Length: 307
Image (cartoon, rainbow, N blue to C red; front, side, top):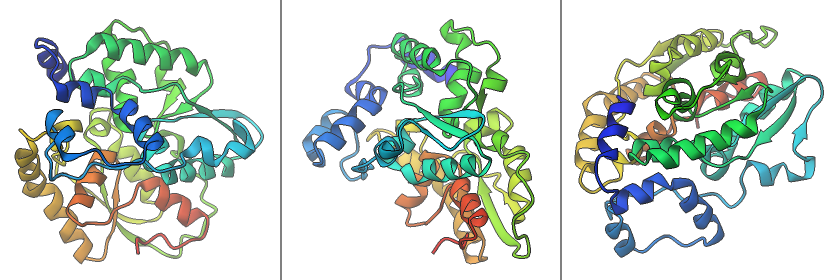
């Protein structure tokens, strides 16, 4: 489906919206340097619905927060964390949770700051740009195992790279999802508290058969219900584009948001893997967290329930 969408966009001249969403990391950089929200007229010019709030980048990303520690933390075997746009510019607390889990394993952690993975450009049909960005990231990864948090970033390499003419050797062992890294999580933590968990996986995770791995990891902490709601409605820029935002909201209200509301009323912890999915939930006033934050909190002995 992602390839079909990319090829369809690629047959037409890129619109202002394509350039905006296809260069999302650039706008995140600019938003951090110039901490002013863009005027409504500019958003309308690039096709963003004027009444849909755009996420605003945080002042300090993961690299800045850990600058005093250098590019590596911890000792022992090496592993790298890919600084995708989401954990570097919008939700560094998720990256921090991952680093804590990696350090718990005695691993030396370094960061891969190589720009965008190419997914935004790919999704808007800007295939040559996507190819350049994906190749740049791969050129900076080397042979060290690398954890990629955002499913849409991981899937550009696992599922779509070949359609861009990029050959990747050993990607299944070099490029890891958080669930794959946590698959052999130690069982030394306190399991006396059994939470009730509602987990919504990202569509790209489903495509890579990751939701089963996540369920297996989360089941160590309690009873897990895996959402079968399908798409959250956001689908990258689809949930921001003025021409499609109404449809995106309708998709979200079909099953995704009602299931979250129902699970919340039942007292379940709401864990949502994808950045786009969490943003759609946030837009509806529903508080969720990433599974990494929950797991790190449990292993640290902190309360895992969203307050």
